[in-house]
Length: 465
Image (cartoon, rainbow, N blue to C red; front, side):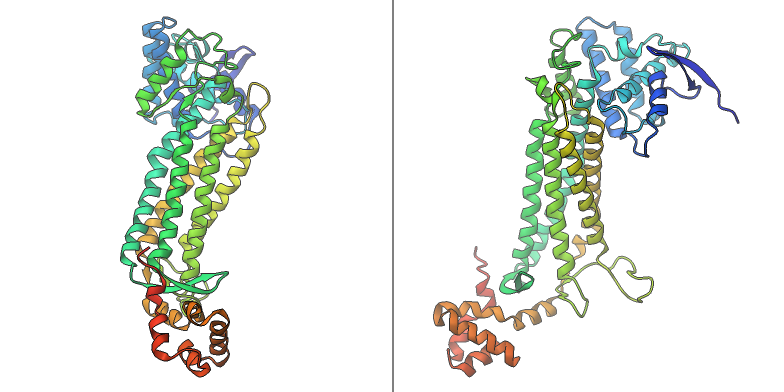
């Protein structure tokens, strides 16, 4: 069946647009000129752009540069878009102009055509709303697109990522309470070390996550100041006086987040250091999660020939050839997510450093990588928590067996008999495959009663600390 087209016009002339499309000429040109890859501009970023368009219409009306009827048409179209009924009208590739201009115009055109439909005008007529003159009034892609990234990033972190990290932290806190009296062998260099409790080991995981969470939260302080009202390069050309503060207040009210107008718009339009900073803190969360799940899969390795000190939930068969094999799959999924986020952060760092003069031309990449990282980390934290961490149990018998065989319990003897004698006890015990107690007795360095009093694994953990 042949698709029918209509002619739409922009400053470069006419172009055929599918009759079923709500987008216009500039969007169609972008579809033709940037048929690159499969990555589309994220809908979360589109919705933030739409939020800005609605806020701008309200402010432009209040400041006397847009009629109430036109402002209402724009606001109603924006409300319609955010219900999700027009999600398929935003088809553009991330790999487009570095300013995001084509996506800004995609949003402008869809809003214009929705208004045309609602008012019985032809699609592409730009009646009663023009995509540039009315929808884009007091704006430029150069201030709108980075502002949309800041808004979308902040919302996704505050409402999705941080709550998931908090839930994971809470589970580790609960495990700490349950594991307070489980004394086990510590390990450094993957070799036996002095003992600690399983709660103390888990406290390190909890603290890592809490620190990473707080770093991300603090990084948002740089994303609350918005460049809106700076228009093309930060001077505010073609925006009415006070527009920047008005729209920041409007967006703060609609998002219930403390957005404000940036004092120096030149700085956050020419570069996106705040976004790069937030991405770097997402990377730090990935690094922490990577370390934690590596600890978990190492401590659970076995079940018979490894450390085997933790029992992870058995969720699915682990091998197509080895019957009964179960693998630490949640750990593996998390490490792949973390590897991806670390790589995405490298791209954002390069993109952030690549700006020239009054504009950074890597905006779509920065937005994609931030939002993808937040989504990956949020969902991976939830999956890991629900399918693994909540169900972890200590293998108490294996923990006790490993502890009893540890030669590093001899460390507690050094204040009494000295480092050299304690070392000889450990070496002799290892060579003869006997216990430390038997070795100490054989060498005659300390009596059995004193040995039993000093070599007490629980007291060595300094649990009162």
